[in-house]
Image (cartoon, rainbow over all chains, first blue to last red; front, top):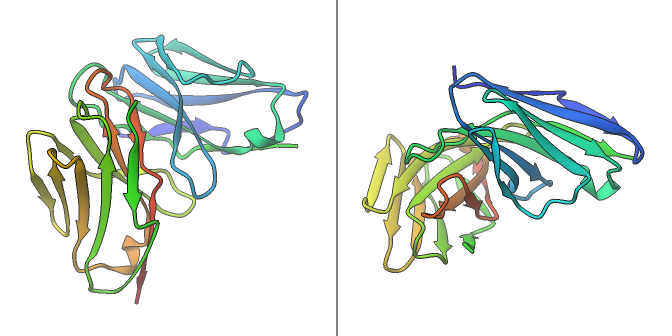
Length: 114
Length: 113
C-alpha cells in the first residue's frame, strides 16, 4: 500500500473560521510533510515531522499549526487564514533518516479562503 | 541553502520525439536528485531518481544523467507519448537533512499527437 490519504479534498473557509486538514499513511513511514502548492508552482515545504517530532518549520505563519498525533497521522490546523493562503495543500510521507527517502504524496486538499 | 533552477519552463514536442529537461543546483553537498511528474489536478509522483555516486540511470523510456562537477542533471524522455504531458519537477536533497527536498520551478511538457 503506497497510499497517502488526505481529507477533505476541498475546503472553503472564511477568514475567521477554524478548520483542520488530515493526512494518513500506513506504510510505516516515520517522516511526514506538509507542502503548499500554488497554481503552476512547485510544492513549497512548510513542515516536516520526523518520528512524531517537528524537525523542520520553514518559517510558516502561526495561523498554520501542525500536529502529529502518532506515526500514521498528520494534521494541519488552520485559523484566521488570509485569501492568499488559498492553495493546494499536499501531505507526503517517507522513510526518515535513511537514504531511502522517496516521498509519496497525497492527492491534496484544495483550500479556498474567502 | 539549496537552490534548484530548471529549464525550459515549457516544452512542446511531437509524439515520438525526445524531450530533455535540464536542472542545476547550488549546494555541492546535495547527493540525491529525484524527478516528479504531476499531471493536471493530480498529485506529484516520483518517476526516477539518482544519487551522486551514479552518473546515469535508465528506466524504460526515461533516463537521468548527473554531472556533479558542473552541478547539473537532466531528464531525458524518448519516444514521447501524449500521456507524458504533465509538469515535471526536478529536486535536490541536502546531505545534512535527507528529509528536506528542494524542488525546481517545473517544466510543463506538452506532447502533440
